[in-house]
Image 1 (spheres, rainbow, N blue to C red):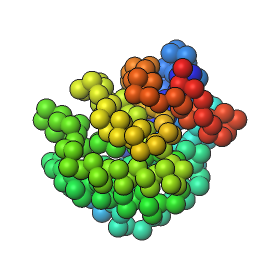
Image 2 (tube, rainbow, N blue to C red):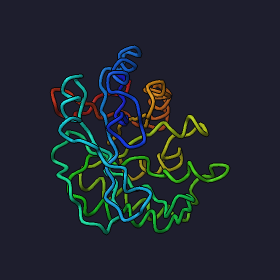
Image 3 (cartoon, rainbow, N blue to C red):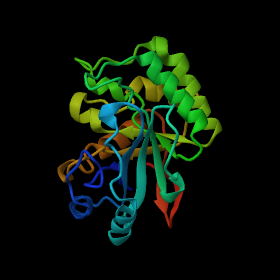
Image 4 (spheres, rainbow, N blue to C red):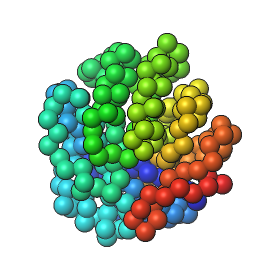
Length: 242
């Protein structure tokens, strides 16, 4: 069953794509289940402040009208008070964007420590989004240095203990032929007992809906994962990837 659980419409600051076109693109590809995950950043970082759902009531209405799972990509700077009720959404991606400013400077140590803190302290989320996200903005897209694997393993252990999972985000496959997180980090997740997976294209345009999802599912199987998380009758359940 093909799903896409990371999609952005014109309810997000950085997309102009109507919900109708996203739904149409998914139907044309026979994607059985999709979730909109509009950006909502709680942050002191100036250039990220506009990334908030414009009208939550209208957004939830659109999801209902088009039979789409209403989700949110919740970003947090791990300092600012959280001012949104995450229980309003059926599906919550926890997302740390890990950049200090618009120059896209990356401090990997701070980034992973913030993820660990958020994973431990945000009470309502389902999956951790695009774990090595900043890789997209570094020349040559280098893999995360293995010196950070101990803290990544800590993150995974917190997720597993709390019944949370990770997203395999296919945007990286469009850029450099690996998902976020990359293959070696996915192997690490599997090695410490991580089982819960979801797949998302991170599409901001209708023509990116579903991109590389099938390939990512094949990759997950090749790495030894058996199950994926799928919405059925309003609940997240485990189903065979194949």
